[in-house]
Image: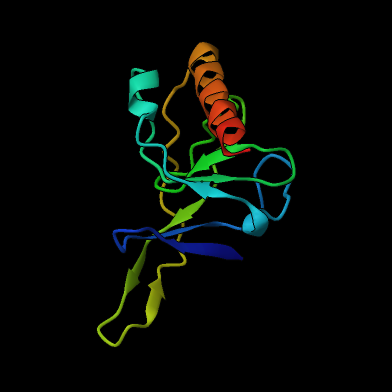
Length: 122
């Protein structure tokens, strides 16, 4: 199964429901926009980002990349669009994996940024 999310600009995203790390249900995870991630790393993912509630792994909804753990396999993502009558249309063939090489140092930087953002909300 999969999750569908619409951002503030109306863009639709589809991502697998089970976390690739331990197959935890990501439907209860937080979705965040982190516009300043590009300042933290040289090659940022594009977001928005979904945090798995089981182990707090964070995935880019645009391409499935796990931005908090460089060794985690990417999540499957799906093309989603709105039809002329407002229906949600999902291409059930997953997009090709797009897991850009991310160094351990970059993953650590992203993870710290995400943790700091979460702490700011408390």
